[in-house]
Each structure stands twice: as C-alpha cells, then as structure tokens.
Length: 590
View (cartoon, rainbow, N blue to C red):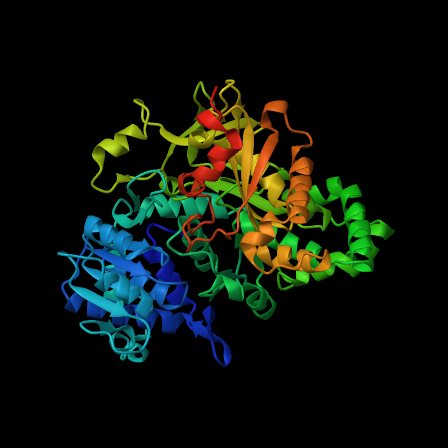
C-alpha cells in the first residue's frame, strides 16, 4: 500500500501508474479504461478551473452524483487545493439538498444529471453557492459543463512539479470532507473527517486484506457513504482499479462483465443473491441445491479455516452448484466484504455452505469509517472481526461500545454541543451500539437506540430477528414492532417479484398488490415464514402478529436510508393505524 499522509498521496500514486488502467466506465460500446495519467490530467485541468473561480483552501465543494468516473476527479481536485468536499446522496429531496448546501456553505456544487441540477435550482436561497457544474450534456441555465472545464486535460497528463508540490502542501490534520448523517433521528449533522482520520483508517483496516496490484472492484454503493468511498480509496492505494457503476440494477450484468476480485456490499445485496439462487431452483434443481448445501454444511470448519474441502461430495457439489453461484459474482472474487448493517447468522451460514467466507466489518461515518473487520488471518463468523490497531475500545456499564483513536472524527460541522454529547467526559466516542468482545473478536448485538423494551420490561434486539425473516425469498424488508407493547409484531414489505411468481404457481389470480397481500393463501405463507423465524427465539422475542403491506420499501419511497437501513420512525408513522389495530385499544401498552 502507498504511504499515505493525505488523500492527495493517492492521486500522486495514480499518476505514477501512468499507462495502467486505474478506472473503468460503461459506455454504449462496453467498458472503457481510464489510465493513470488521464486521471491525473483531468484532475489538474479541474484544479485550474477551481482556482480561477477563487476556490481556496478550506472552501466547501459539494458533489451530488451517482458512481461515475467524474466523481473521483472532482473529489481529488477539491482535495488537491485543500478544499473540503461535501458528498450528498443523489436520493435526497430538494429540501434536504438545500439544507446541506446552506449548512456547509458550499461554494461550488457538482451535479451529475438534470434531476440533480433541478434539485439545486429548487433548493431555495443558497447565499454561499457561486457555481453549479453539470456532468451530463444539455441546456442548464447558469451552469458550467464539466466537459468544457476538461478540454485541456489531454495536454496536462505529464507530471508537473508545481502541481505535485501543491499536493504536498496539505497537512494531515486539515479537514478533508464533511459527510452528512442520514438525519433519520433528527436534523442531519455534518461529520468532519480530516486527511489523517481517513488515511490512518485506510492503513490499519485494509493492510491485512490482501488487496494488491491488478485487483478490481465495482464501485456501486453510493460514494456519499463513508464505507463505499473508503473501499475506493483502498483499491487505488493498493494498486487496483475500479469499475464505476451508476445504477444498482445493472450490478448482475456488471459482475459478469468486469469479473471483480473484490466484492463489497451491504447485507441486502448478499440476501438478494441468496434469494435469487433459491427462488430460481425448482423441482430437481431444488433437490440438487439442497443436497449441495448439505454437503457444504458438513465442511463448515474447513471452510471457516479458509481451506478447500477435499471430500468427494464437496467436489461434486462445487462443480454442479457452488461454482455457478460464484459465477454470479463474476467468478474471480477472492474477497467478499459486508458492512453497513449486520449480515445475520442465516445468511452467513448459507454462504459458508457454498464455500464463501463473507468478511463482516463494522464502523461508522464518525470513525472514518472502520472500527473492526475480519481478515484472512483472523476470521470468525457472526462477529465483525478484530478492532483495527489504531483504535482503543471499551464497553460502558450498559454494554455500549466506546472508542478512541486517530480515526475518530474531528466533530460535527458547526455543532459544538452536539459533538460534546457524543463523547464521554474522558474523551471516548460513544458509538450507540451494544457490543461484546471475546478472544479479541468484536460482536455487535444491536443499536442502543433501536433496542425495544416491551411493556413487560423485556428487551428485544430487532435486527437479528429481522435478519432471520429476510432469509426467505418472499420477504423484501421486515420491521419489528414492540417498544412499550405487550408483545412483538412485525410489518413485512414483500419481495413482490418473488411473491407474484409464487402467486401464479399457487392459484392466486389477482395482480392488484393490495388484494394480493390480503389473500388467505398469501397470509398463510407469511405466517409460516414468521413461525420458522420464531424457532430458537426467547418467548418474549417471538413474533405474535404480522402486517403484510402492499408497498415495496425503497430508498426512493423513503422507508430506507441510502445504505439500505430501515427508517423505523418513518415506517411506524406510515403504518401507525394498522400497527395500533394489532394491539387493540390502548395501543398494546399495559
């Protein structure tokens, strides 16, 4: 890995790779490479434009875009002159965009499409904003086109001593980025991360993951999310290359085309892969799949140890079934990483059965982001791995994990009091997660704020139970209900692709989703899914009643964050009448 003082050193490393491919982008003709000197030339050209506009050290530059090659060019250019970039999710509303642009005081906003441009235009008064730059072609009043700013980039691909000296002027302690929290529990807060925060986290969290020259990954998780950006920096710093994918819906095709060696995703992506495999298996195929999974389960210890089983049953299962599942990831992936939320025991076990160790990690935007991760040398399923060396951890009396170290954030932008509340008097950051530490391996049991307490005084951690439900292909999302209630219930948003196929096969004729979820056969099948999930749970954790809704929860419709986490407050409010009806008068409280 490159020696990193600042993120600018990653750009310098890309320039040194000269004619090597460092990135790829999808055109109508297929995947096209971007070599190191081309990336360097584009960044230099954009730096010249920013400086001509008077953008200087400490100024904020916003980026609102899908994952595409322009994103790192803007990122590296802003950081090259000591500016602070402010990445915003492309799924935000105009009101949210307006709040974050005003709060950060962004001087320039780079946007990808007309949709994002329109959000900025309709975001209200933006007194600090001086320029808007659009990636796409078209007519955009009062905006610049990025292609015009990069016209001379081809003449700026040679290394330039003055520009390289500029890169070295930035100090590790300087602010690199402001990343806004999702705001699901209140007003969004801007997390301030320095170059040192990011670089120390990169060094201590990725050196044991065997990432090297020639490795590749598909960049598809939103780059406004700290984890996605972290992996992209890591791939660049270790000598690999990235394929930028603007839309999640294109991922299955991209995996087969790019054949990445590294695959990073949130748990929902892994769950969908499993659901896809199991949903397609019918009749004889299903019997073969179940037989193969049984062979895999018998070899669990060998797989956990990172070795290939030698039994004849395994070899046959691998040839018939497991190799085809790996082909869904492109066939070359050697490192599978899951982060952003718990993967769940059932999903972990399923992938182990097919011979894939998914390395879970854990962190937060405020910790740059990684706190712990599994590695090839230290892997334990159902944990988030070992804590990275530059961080110290301890558990508070109630089990909350507290951390301190060089990758803990510098504070919330313009929110001194809010920052103080997140730290203990002796300077430890309070993660808000309940954890346990055994033999050096960290396990997260649940979010402290999400723990539900029934009216009988029993605590329920919702995420493990929800993970058990989402194992079934018919479940898209599930939200447990039970705080201050007599018993636990669940609201289920179906996977309608799978449910509609099931309905056709089982004589349920309606195509109206509202009628479909109320059908007696459909209700019965979801009751069966809940009964299976209840197995092994404590009595107070078991789900007593269910609501199956006619809506598929998405980021766009507002029930999920961009990292695919539930917005519980939104769901509780949206379905409050149906939830209250489950508990009768008094809303279920005793």
